[in-house]
Image (cartoon, rainbow, N blue to C red):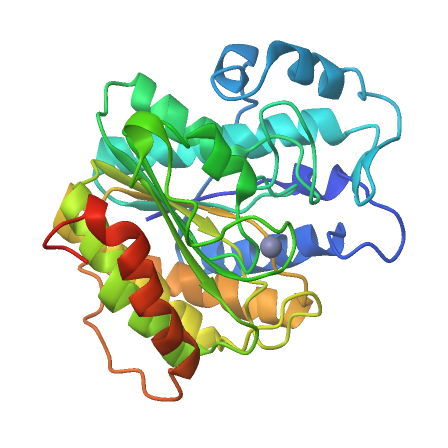
Length: 340
Ligand code: ZN
């Protein structure tokens, strides 16, 4: 297991009081420091190249973000670029690609601690605190190395609209999202199942506010696990957002740190069974600093388990996922016969 991190991520500035604050990078630094102290491997990122970015972003959009260098620009009502943001964002994408390179070369888990996050960034538009779509560029880069099938799992509390649309008609990238619905950014209905050749390769599990550990566990066991297994990815990417934690000031979910660890272990077991353990994770949201610290720490511990820890039973209220499972099966079942 390898961690990719850098002190540079603190240099992306946002206005005072913004939830996606530089202090998040301090938490990442602190968790990284403890990881290294325990003997863990830490690798630096490299900046992503323009050629890598334009796999999913338009050249005009890359130019637009490049032009923010050295200035402070408000890109949308809640997304900002400061003087250093362009360069920092290049490193966030590059860190995710380095995580993929480690996962592929060593058949292991790797995680990139980055900001700004990425999954809301669209082909030609910054939004939701995101400049470049880190996980999407990394998925495209993995495909460019010759992989035929890549799965992207996203457990951030928000739906990853950018990632979904970038691969919406692409049968080689399975996008799976568990998210609060309806909630920012408004996408992620269970009827969003993909388009054209990519139909069936988008799996949305929209959950009402208040869902907790047992709801997410059941979603992983009954929906995500079977579909990912049937898709048979050669690499799993994880958009690791920790804003579904009960302490998060933006999200309305009730996941505990242990619930997140259980989900991470589930993803890791899927990687072990589908693709020789090749799992590359990248941070997304997570705005309560204490919860972020605890979740990053427990994710590192979980991902360092080799082989992955076996499944534990998660008990508790599952009423929110119980209501959604039949509807997801109706929406996706025709594309996954015998699976859902
Ligand atoms: Zn989020």
